[in-house]
Length: 346
Image 1 (spheres, rainbow, N blue to C red):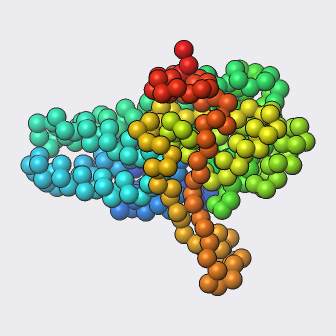
Image 2 (cartoon, helix red, strand yellow):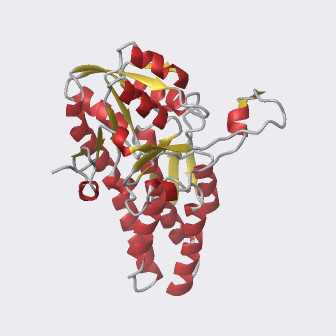
Image 3 (cartoon, rainbow, N blue to C red):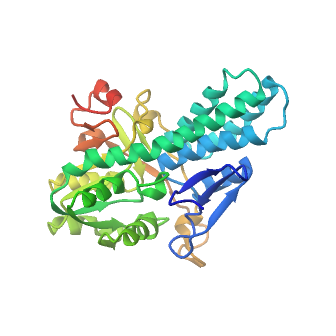
């Protein structure tokens, strides 16, 4: 049983359990992952997706590699686990949490005296990351909820809910926390082409929670904002640099439109998503396959031989962001390096 979580460690079977997000909303299937290659495939196919969830999956991936490794002495054991870590790390180059989760567990294993000690350290650290994620998301929600009016309509993009974390969510965590304290919140979710994470995942989550949800196509955003019905935009993030927020492709467009229509644009993300060592121009944006744009289901909507561009993410300059909501508090403009390191504005 997953007890309401998106990705978890099954101690009895020594495997990673997760909800296959590619099948939602039509089927809620639990997958039991027993190999690093299968986990890498799951991450590449977006069966597991969302920055915090990738951090947890990365941590559990190293635990899986450590528990399955048959090397008896420490140095060959650590080398084998490191090779598996490199494979996992290469699956999603833009999302920083994946490498963060991998590195935390690898670092925890380094001081172990022997293989059993390293395996025990991997289990302890991975479970710690898992439990921290839920606490973190609830803290983000509690800090962000006061930003929302008592009665409001929120626009969001992609999925930054429980499915993008281990539970609760970041952007949707703010919405859930606002509802929990008695605010009346309705949501407009952009469908989020090309893979429809807004319509398939965000709508699925909020409908199950009984939070009013309406789905629009991405190209309707300007029209809806101009109508005056949107009180705020809240999105998640896959990487936050000092000068830009990387999130699902289309986020930058919503930020520009929000600024034009004088609508607050909020980013909700844990500190593990921050990468203050790089500028936006140094970040590799993942380019995904042609089929995601050319086909929907079994139908093709593009003539043979016509190329596509399919970047998975875009970069929103921080000067378009009204506030960044973290587990430590709220960071407000001008987003100094010290404030971003602390996770809040003093």
